[in-house]
Structure formats: structure tokens, C-alpha cells
Image (cartoon, rainbow, N blue to C red):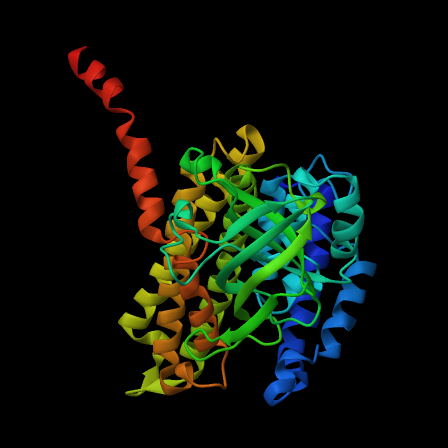
Length: 413
């Protein structure tokens, strides 16, 4: 898909967004880092430049672009249209998504409230999230079990009169360290006697509820990604009213499938933007530095790196567009194969492009003077987050193997 394939309205949004990302967000990246607090204050200080960018994005009409068509709270874009815009945000992956109120995990959580929340839950939590006044976290992954199989999750959510009592330990909870994080969506088990995919439940837990403790921030290859962060969180005898239940007991898997499908594609969309920026830096560096009497870009190996990177990025983009289009046409639950294909391929493509850019930069590529090392650490997590590669590969293979009767029938013709 080219920009000319988009409607005039989306083309204009792309133009405005590109200008915002290139001329506002990317120049603000260094300012953002300088404004983050030091020491313990890294988890208390929100860089003022982010709030300034959010206000600019609102005025430019770049706010809540992710909300899918059919919801009056959003701009009415299809997933395919948003894919193009989300890629642009990925060029400044730390700044632009949050500045446009399109950052994870808030986007997924807002979609949960949009699809499954009741009127009261939407008023209390969705409204301030849509306005960018608060942030949120999704608490699913646990340290004691292999959470790639969500049926393993051990956190308990037990009914006690008009309340639910939650006990468990979660980790890699993105956004839990942010002082603006006011609500958790917690996944746990309510009834272990039910079929394994009917045991899980999602419940709303206000962040200031007694018994909720952020145990520690976790680093990704040494990066803490403050003030947002990825944290270990304990829930000890946490009591919330029954009204905080989302959709109903045993409906957790249903909610997760509705949340993670589009969320996985959003990550892939942004990753394409990251890869494009990495290739830009590779080309620029190779065209400026000389080795052995000529520019790096004139060496055959560098030319090969540039060409292969371009090929892979285009392949990844097409997989993302295909998945987004299928979500639009048949829904996320029926587009599992297309989502899985993109989820496996795109992070690895992005990592390979980043690795080539790092190699061309030499020592500078692994240091703090470029964003390449940080981006590599961030993108490497995508091969694990929202389901590791192995799980998606298994899912793809199972769907392919379902074609065996059809293939055997063809062989007899």
C-alpha cells in the first residue's frame, strides 16, 4: 500500500503526523532524556516536554488515532489505515506514540474498556485514559510459571461476599512504574474446576488499592525505560468490589484474545517505523565515513546490507498490512494466522536491520550516543512479549496442518 492508496483524509493525517514526528518528536528525544529524574526520581518525574507534545498532538488532530472504526470515541480509521500512521509513530517509538495517546499498554487497555466495559467502568477509567490524564497497566505475566501458556497463570481471584480477593505475583508489567498509572487490569483464576480456558478472569484493580505493591523495576539489557518501566508487582489480599469484574467470571481468555490481536499488530506497525529509521541511520553513516580509501557505502558488504534491509522491511510491511486488512474484514479472532505471521517475522526483521546499523556504526553503535542499542534492547523483547516466537510458530503450523485433508483430496484428483 502506498500513501496514494489512502483516502485524502488519511493522506493529510499522514502528512501532519510525519511533520510532527520528524520536527517535534525526534528533536525532543534528547530533551526527554535530560528531563527524566535522577536516581529514585526516575520513577517520579514526568518530562515536561512530553506534556507539551501531547498538547500539540491534540491541536493537530493526532489524538487517539488507534481507536478502531465503529467507536464514536475515535477518528473512524480502519486498522489498515492506522497501520500506515502507526508506522510513522514508530520512527520515534519512545516519544510519538505516547504524545499521540497511542502508546502501549494504554491502547490495549482502552480497547478492553471500549469493547467489554460497562457504563460505570467506562466513565471512571476509559474517559481519563482517552483524555491522557492517567495511564494504566495490564497484569498477566507471572515469574513462577510459563506465562506463554496463559492456562498456567496462578494468581487467584476469589469471590468473598460482594468483593473479590486477589493474591498473586506478576512481572514485566509495563507502565506499572509510572506515577500516572492509576489502574491495573489483572488476569487471574476464579474457578479451577472449569475447563482450562474458562478459569481465567480479568478484574479492574485501582493502583492505590491496599495490598498492591510495585516490588521493583526490571531492566531490559540494562535499560529501565523510566518513568514508564517494566515492573514486578505483588497483589496480597487485594480487595475490590464485584463491580470491578470485566464481562464476567471465566471470560478472561475472550478478553485477552480481543485485546492482544490488535495490540500485537500495533507493535509490528511501530517496529517497521523503527526499522526504517535504523536503515536511514545506516545509510547516512555509510555515506559519511571512509575506510580503506573509500566511503563505507562503496564497499560491497555495506551495499548488500542496505539492499537486504530494504527488501526485508518491504516484506515485513506487507505482512503487517495484510494482518491489519484481515482484522478489518473478518475480525482479530479469525485473523490469527495473519497476526501470527507478522508477529514472528517483523520483530526479527527489525532486529536484523538494527544489527546492521550497529555494525556500520562500529563502537558508536553500542554506546549511548545513538539510540541504536536502546532500540535493539526494546525490539528484542518483542520476540517474547505478547507470546514468544515459538508459540506463534506452533500456532501457524497447526493451522497449516489443518489443510491436510484438502491436500490429500487434491492429490487424488
